[in-house]
Image (cartoon, rainbow, N blue to C red; front, side):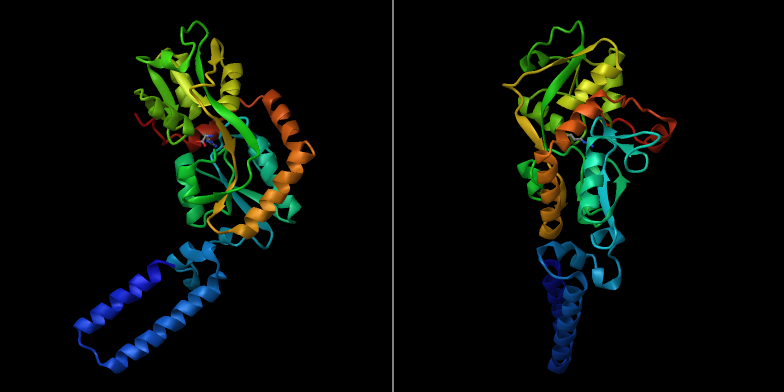
Length: 312
Ligand code: ARG
């Protein structure tokens, strides 16, 4: 609720400058309080309502996605991350398929709702969540302290690590062998942060497939990316292998993100994750999609991202 007091504060200053009568001030204070109350009532209160209030939810700016109740549960993702999310002809949620998509569908079903996907660039997901363009993010998103400042995460549902994808004949055997090599990462992924921490230069791409194509075409020496996704790229492309370095790359845990303070939805998500972890659903999904052909560079998904260019 930080913005409101500042806003009204600025109004009062203006009024003072205009030397308005005390009477007028009293009226505007009354108005301010009434409107603030309206904002509170409109968004249901709770700390999760802060950005709804800031963007004027009371005046109808709230998107459908911002209200989890009522049939639809909107998940934001970036469907460029097999086996967790990718575009296919017939997925579990519309054209979207993968481990995360199956989990999202189940979470919605557990709560008598239907899952819907809002597919966007990975880098835009957290802002999209804060703006109410989705109820939750499910995107193989690693739980990090930095992200925790902006969103609330569910309990972890998957453990991964960064690995190095290299040509089969590469002499890279550990992370420090990347020194002086041409390294590619994906923009905004934890792989980028990991390479930054190691202190090496790199080029970043918008999509994993772009980085891998660069590698396949011999234009770079190594791609640093999450383990399960790396596996996919290695099985989809000839002549690549994975090199691990457990000392250089920490293990990472994936979580589902909700808007800060949305404990109501978070509790539901955690209940579903607990159930799916305990009854083996998540391991089954991981095994199933590890074996599924996810090499689906359909013309549709190409077209969707045609405007994107690699950020170098
Ligand atoms: N785990 C990595 C991260 O959190 C990569 C996630 C990429 N996910 C995606 N759907 N593109 O940064």
